[in-house]
Image (cartoon, rainbow, N blue to C red; front, side):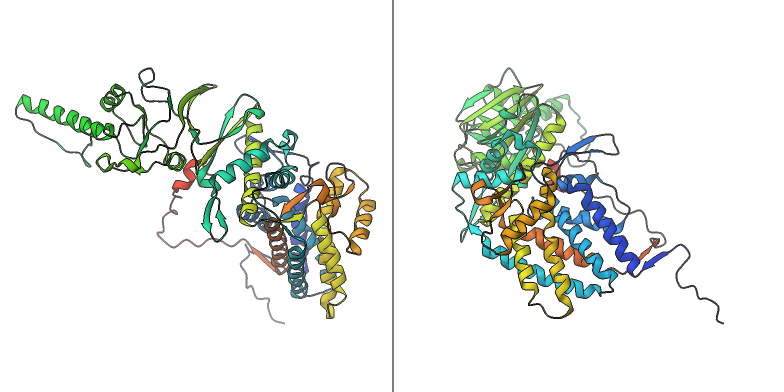
Length: 555
């Protein structure tokens, strides 16, 4: 008898075969169950305590999963799903997880019957192709400029969110903001850059109803010399700089030896003249407001205020870009290169207002601004954070519609239609793949079922009624009204979803389910090998795009 051979180190754990499949499926179902109750208009909120003791109250699938710290590798990849969904289309983060969890759940039965995972995956991919085909068939195009349709759409998207009780407020904000910054690329394509050109400024205090989209920008700064400089200017001429208005110091430390005392005065005089020179170059253009990203010395401040110019210093680069977009100015790097065309004249009003404790500078009433600020007011910080997350979702949906103006029914109607069509098609699928294909069809029903559960109606009755209505394929628009749980026509109720959100949801969910099914071995306990003499890894360097984020510290 041979002695047993040790291949893997003792520290390694290895699980393989069906055990792994079951573990993965269990883990994914657990993740899906965490956020299952946050689907639909009757959804619950989750309260999460993070390590620092901060509180997050939300029902945005992605925000919840982002805070969770999981041990199981399969569960971690489920979390990635909702992140991709959030980055790609911004909405449907909860549905993706619920759908993927359900896909794995129905696959479990087949694995117990010793089906090979690749067979199941093949059937799933086939089901996905057919599902997208069904989506194409029932999608209806809309007119982006028709405000009421857009409103209905964005409203049904954030109807599931906490802010739905404020009615059209958030929907209005989102549509205003996205239509403002939309840029035509030609060929009927529109690009909407939410991250760069829409800034959400949260100011605690006041009521949610005071929130608005400014026709321009605001930022948390005051003029340099309050009292001397004007705080309100109508139709200002704005100059944006990103150079310091102060005497340049040498790059490295320089020592100058002065022999005579007069030379010292000459030096000081040179500094003053240099600054005066710069200010005169700027004042040639008769600006009313000068804004710089860098410092502004007292002397420069004096010259500017004498000329009746308001100045603002040390502005964030990203904010400066937004002002440039809003009032049509060009950011200038050196004062000697200023031209008349660089002066921004598009703004209607420059004003510094005090909100709460801080001074905020408003540059508003712009003509055709290409950047905007959404000013959110609200009772508490947690509320504001949640409203901001909802606004992000709403803006993403508005952006999706502007990019691809097609609608599919919401309220679980799309999933039911897909499910019914796939069930009919499954009879024509040959071979062993027929059963997993049919199971995938049934899995799509998870979404309407969850909606019904969250409304607290009789799930089985509602589901059978809906399946009956869809089975003969008469009306693709029949679904669940998420508020009452009644079966209704989604067209009349104006409950819609964006086409590319749905398509992305299906794709992400099924592909992820396939990936998790294909895992048959988990080896854990692998040590990182560090090359001898290798130092610690390089610190992460922040890019300019992150500078806007409130949480600069890594999570």
